[in-house]
Length: 175
Image 1 (cartoon, rainbow, N blue to C red):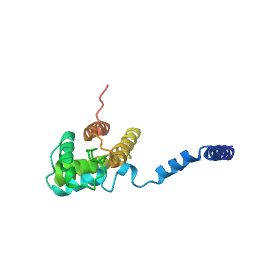
Image 2 (image 1 turned 180 degrees about the vertical axis):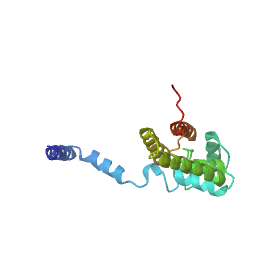
Image 3 (image 1 turned 135 degrees about the vertical axis):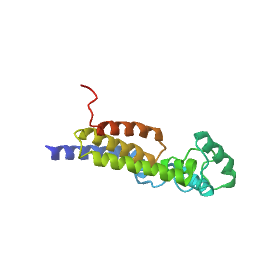
Image 4 (image 1 turned 60 degrees about the horizontal axis):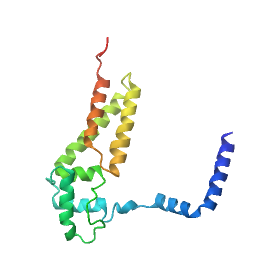
């Protein structure tokens, strides 16, 4: 039965590819594209890295508006930047490094690693394995994978930390 389903889907997609060839060409171009939306190469992330290189130790301070202000002031000095108005770095590591400098980045990365180790060690040693597994998947999916392509609110980690510490507690909360 699964073989018949695979064959039927293959025939269906082949027929659709013949009918809408232009849309499939665009889809495959987007899937193979390595520089999506000018992300690198003087786009959002590379321009943020240029600003970070100017002040890597202490950073510039926190705030989304601060990045916009500095970027928009400095765009004149970098004519090869693709975007003439700030779009934010679209990368969690770069945004933290821009804001807090290298020491703040190391502190946040240490927190990320500590959370992951706590979740990883808590999974096999606890009766609430499903909870730890769900938290690990949320952490990996939201904080790590999503963090490579957009900036997430680091404060969301507080929820994961709170739930992980609660799951690790041996005390009964309800009698």
